[in-house]
Image (cartoon, rainbow, N blue to C red; front, side):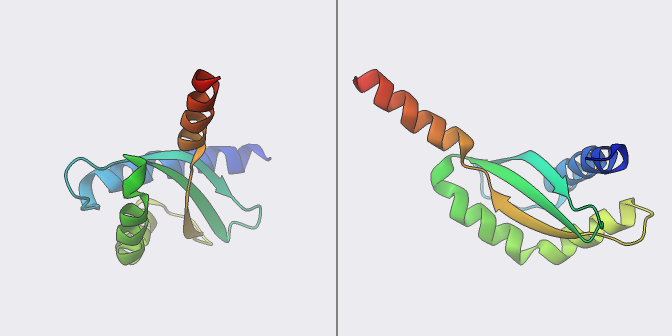
Length: 109
């Protein structure tokens, strides 16, 4: 991965974190964390992996982001002065949930 892409991923993560705090309206008790940001080399797409706590609210969080994707994309575009502007794709990061399952299995053994 190029140094430019690495810097962009870090910048996207910071800005999206700020945007989520200010503009994303999740119900109380639902927390969202940006786990990973991965931008394609041609700068067309940025895949954002998010983790949700509690995990059972993941569907709700993904639907909420889907409803507000245009305002999130617009807010990010205003913060960045670059062309082309990558399209955001949000995916669920279930690493923590799977780690909990494995830990429970190991405790049962």
